[in-house]
Length: 98
Image (tube, rainbow, N blue to C red; front, side, top):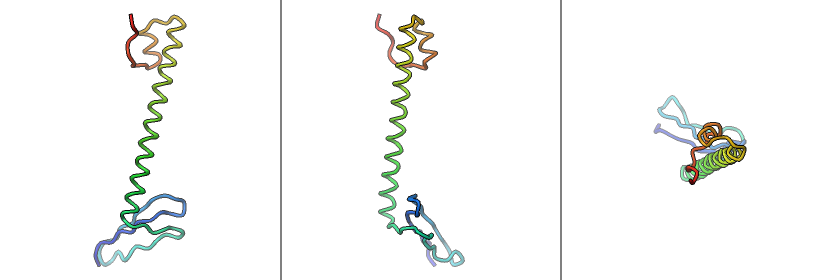
């Protein structure tokens, strides 16, 4: 029996694949409630999931940078020296204009 890979979406919505190889492995079967996908559908949906994950990660970084900048500005407004404000806020943005 040739190597076989089954691509599917589980009942809970997760993407999954199941591979079997050799005579002893037998043909893989879909778990209960799963929907079969072609390899192309699986790869397309997986790429979409990865793109959404990457976008979310970028959004988190941008939000963190915005928080650091706001914290830095608040510390500077309260009279904290620039170097200390940078260290406390974790701010690595551009230096203040002289």
